[in-house]
Length: 170
Length: 398
Image 1 (cartoon, each protein chain N blue to C red):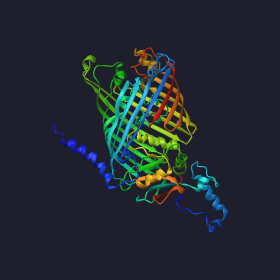
Image 2: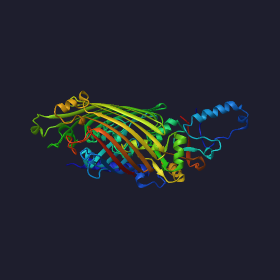
Image 3: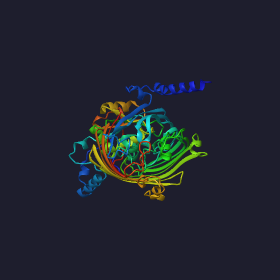
Image 4: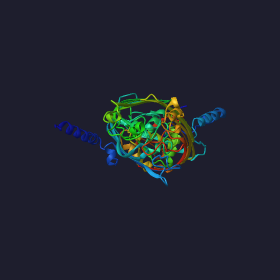
């Protein structure tokens, strides 16, 4: 299942609405199964403003597998393909957007991510992520830091950063 | 003494990161440490131990009213020197009588060089002093937040044997594959163990002898699998560790020509984790210099009641010599009570993290046998067979 999110995701068109309801319902069910415990409700306001992955504009990649994304945010993958060290920017552990990011994008809990970080930070393998106070500060830092990657709600993202496509789900 | 090469090296290390910054002006006001690729982390932690028997001490837990003799603190730095080279070091303070440990030590200090690999792989080499990979927890055994309780299962991660199992110095090569089915990692190291101090002498001779064991050789190998979601699903590890020490100075007083201590062990670790619960089990088999086969195994279940509150239950078994599992032969040979040769430790505990940087833990142990107690703080001929111990710990990270 390959569901990509980007800033230009479309609303369903008329042509799509004419599709028979059964296959669509099955598809919806399948999508639901892929979400790994993330509550998905049609009227959930969070759906209208999904979390997207942002990098500095000069990053040579346009998309990432969910696997690479997890490895990067778990501080396991520490160099981009061109060798530039990855710099991870996050919001604080207690920020609701951080928890949404962990659940909706990575498919894990914030506590899981923290445990993964501790394993590398306290054995000297990696620097800890840069924790930013607000989404605005995070986006600003990502826009100006070589090798930076972070996340934000789509509504907050500007042209100053690049939005990276990623595969969602397991 | 010609100091020029050292001075040149110092100049290079100071100039390199500055050059990188100058080449690309950075309008974002990153902190000074970020600008130079520097990163600092640390924690402080204080424990309280109280045992039901005054003759069964674990970090002096038998003292009337209990003991606060378990303090841990660390500060570390990570310096991304160039794209592919980093330097990391950690200073560790511990006050822990169970491992004859009181003071500050250099926990690790190494240069890590990563190789050019495909994006989804990683490989590198570490040179210096590094943490020994063994089981799930040895590398972070002194970091309270990473432990599955206030103390690690004592069968496999004994406090009394800690100083010589924790780090070694030499070279460590690692490689990781990141695939949709999970992560496969291999670590191999060769070097010498850190100086063992007197804790080794307490284990072998039940006393501190003049002179010190001299580190000889440490070899570790670990093959590890982790599921695609960090800290969820299956994890498994197969670990090997071997270390040896020579005791040369006090040979006359022992009536020995020389004495070499060695210990080789292999461990199998398994974990299955869901967001709300996990089950962990690790078993190890070790062979000491005297051919005694030490067996250890534990099973632990964790359950998360609330996002910030979890509980666990653990059963832990340690046998010092498989040829004499329940110590009957040792007792018959006049080497003390049989129950000093094994330990069955049943524990329950809870961990509350009111804030991400703060952890409060409570734990209760019911123990039969004394195999993991240290003779440095116990007269093991007097220790009770069955005893209980309550513990509390507060930890703060920064």
